Length: 281
Length: 253
Image 1: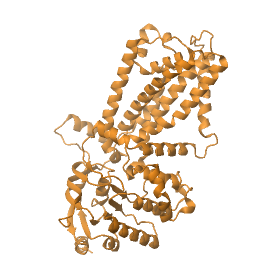
Image 2 (image 1 turned 45 degrees about the horizontal axis):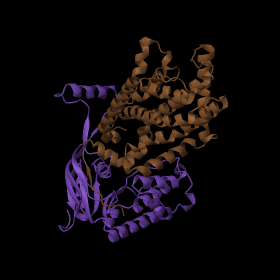
Image 3 (image 1 turned 90 degrees about the vertical axis):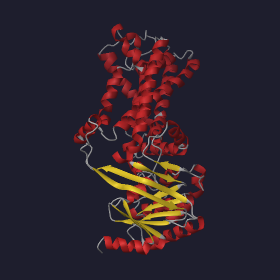
Image 4 (image 1 turned 90 degrees about the horizontal axis):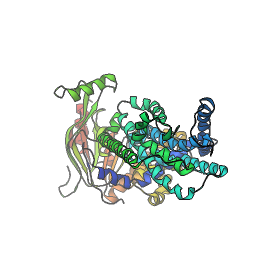
């Protein structure tokens, strides 16, 4: 028998502590949903999760061909490593962010059958993309390590690799922020969900994945100053490729502050909308 | 509603549930905006009160049959009690754990196997891996689907998936059992088996039952009182025979 249970159902927004408590009790749900989503993702596929092993390669090859061979863009590698690696290190983090955000933005629509038939913690659904996208992320990181070893440029990597943890954490916060805002706002009016792909493509151009902060002209430096994703790409390249780390402390603080502001906004939107989700699905 | 010695297990106070009738589109968006900026002006969206200022207490051990015409608010009330949808006004206090099976497709994911769906559903009801393993075989045996446990639900017939859904619902721990039109699609034999199980469980464990059905015999068999709803309001609460008489008269039957 389950332990004694008292529940009050009203129209009021729940407090943050209630939501956190519910997430703590939803551990089994999150694990089950993530495992089942993984199974569903690879059902009737030949390559299974290995699809993620090849995808970033092809994606980077195309961008590398367009930017290096056709547009002749110089990413200032000083001949230490091929341009391909510069783009690849950026795309591994970008793909985790973009895939998680896109998948999160549709979690309610994707799980509408569950949501309409049984009460499940609404926030639990947002963990599924974050957990499942760890597979391509880890595969990408292993790929980078293998390539760096091949090119013999992994000096000091063992010490710097621990800096990846805060970088991954920041990526999780950013993708959750975007995913939450789009998912919650698009339940009633689905216009936003339709524009997420274009929004992300636009954001990619200003994210530091395709160029480093040092290449941005002075009058456009504000883009890098305010965009938290520059911290992720610049730090990743410093960790993996020993690129110079040009981000100042005040830039880091401004990027973290902006991340925090948007994260708080996303939580407020989630609190305001969660009670009506099932009525609008 | 029950013997005064019994403990209130569900308290419903001034419960109201309003649904928007018209589609969410440019017109409704314009109306939403108008409502925000012209606060005195009432929005031009169309609404319906599925539950209208309903107040009710249900006591421990009650076996309540919920009856009424289509659209009287039965399923909405069940969805609120199950926590699926929130009230528009008023409140519901649940003083114990709820297990529910609502009409239709249940929360199965059709591409997943029966095993995965059972595990997932048990997790939704708060059961961890150990507790799920404990009742897993009982659920499978009761649903009579031992040979199809690794088969995706999409290959199950409607009856088979409903049998599995019922088996899960009645084996998951919960003092308040909420069932809405659960016997659709299933054969007579299995219906009798479930009825017997529910009866035994209610008596031996002192559970509270709320059952929605249009089947008069089923309600008379399992419930000791009925709640008749009409346009979201209570029309009658009391003995089953009297409740059905009023229901028949109001339906001109």
